[in-house]
Image 1: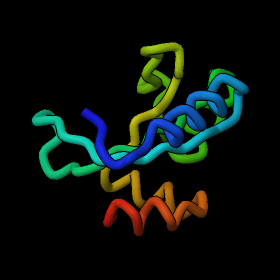
Image 2: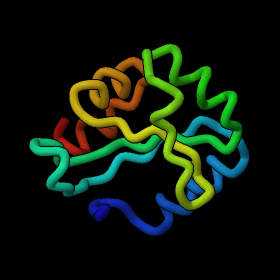
Image 3: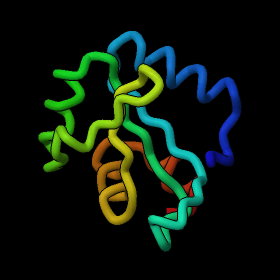
Length: 99
């Protein structure tokens, strides 16, 4: 379940993904399968080849792409989440979600 984002932020992410851009969305999140993770960053693009190339830069396996809901994306969790956000210049996500 997602927390800490607005509908507008979600819509903007969905629109950017649909245009084929590489788009980032971080939100609070709870899932008992991922102990210690309080947030997730979704990095998506409808241009799946572009998304795969982006993931290769960080050693992400293309099999990890989630195709659910017509918004292909990687789910980033600690420790990769913060490292990738730093390298991509998303310090605002790091600060906002206390990473």
